[in-house]
Image 1 (cartoon, rainbow, N blue to C red):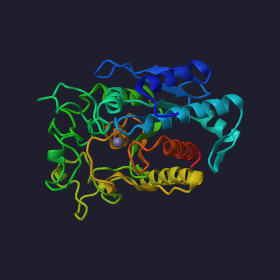
Image 2 (tube, rainbow, N blue to C red):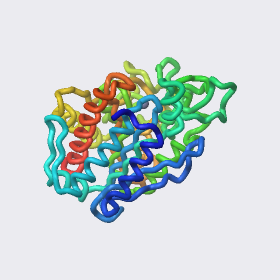
Image 3 (cartoon, rainbow, N blue to C red):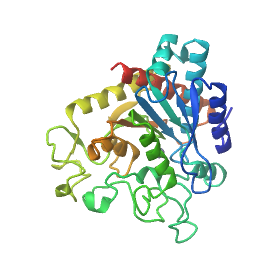
Length: 355
Ligand SMILES: [Zn+2]
């Protein structure tokens, strides 16, 4: 075994849909990638689609973070096989009973989208291992200025020069030649980002969202733009009175999150870390995204903010996993990380259903 190439990730997803037709359906994303690759997700669940609350799990957003796709492919395969055969799941020293597997598959819709950015992964695996963005040449001023960071392209404080304090250190750029974090010309300018939005729109009962990244051994909950606070409801990303103040640690501004939501956000992050630690003792840290570094336009802040911007949308508890201590560990180590993160995700799903 080794890392999958982009064709293998996609064929693994398609194969699972044909191997377990009564338990999952292949979801073809609305738009192909910039380079024309069709993208697939799997909707997994023993109950009819749309009759349960939904968890959307995505990976392969950042091209160089190779193992994220394998983490989600293995999770889907493990859950489907265990449910189909009526067995439990074992990940190192962590195990789940067959009843727990049934609880997950009968209790929720699970939508798994392992490879959001196929063009970037292919480029990373064949040309430039440290490539992060997609491969959109549309904003290029030359060959070194290709690509948009998908995880800065969501509609959350996208206009960071207005929203953030001048010296906030927010990790985003409006320079198309930035190798890492160019956010694109507008929110949702990229088909890969629009595909994720479309998934959230297509499953209106989505209550949980997890974006699988590397690395730093953290389980990040909202917010990413500033420190969390639950005392001043007016201090939010939607209030222009606070433009130019966001992103600093030791100041008055903090991003509002209702206390109940904060508690739930932390609890599910803790459950993920507990499930993961059981495999071989690795301790991940549950923490707010901001405590890694300030960001704008990320998937987790966007997913959680949707119900605040549009009250007709459901509330989504949203997370970013940062697995491991390097982008491309040797496969022997990656295979252990896959077990860890998958155990954490199964524990997360169980806690989401029965907090
Ligand atoms: Zn990443």
